[in-house]
Amino acid sequence: MNEFPWRFEICKQCGRNNVVGFRVTDSMWERVTDDMEGVLCIWCFDEMAAAKDIDWTEEPVEFYAVSTVANRKWAQVEVIREAP
Image (cartoon, rainbow, N blue to C red):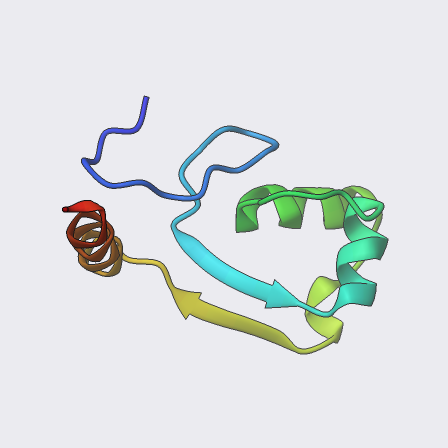
C-alpha cells in the first residue's frame, strides 16, 4: 500500500515506489531489460544490468527529481481538473 496520499509510479519488478527518476537510451533499456515495458526503479534496473554484466552508465543517463513535493503539486492539479 502506498503510504503517501499522492501516487507514485510503482516498480514493475519489486513493487516499491519509484522515487528516483532516470532515463537511459532505448538501446540500453533493451539490452538490460530485454525490452520489458513498464516502470523499473533504479535499484531493480541496476540489479538487472549487473546480472548481465552491463555497465549502464557507459551511455548517457538522465536523472530527474521525483519528489513528494512534485507529486503533491501534480496531485493537486489533478484534483482541480476533476472538479466540476
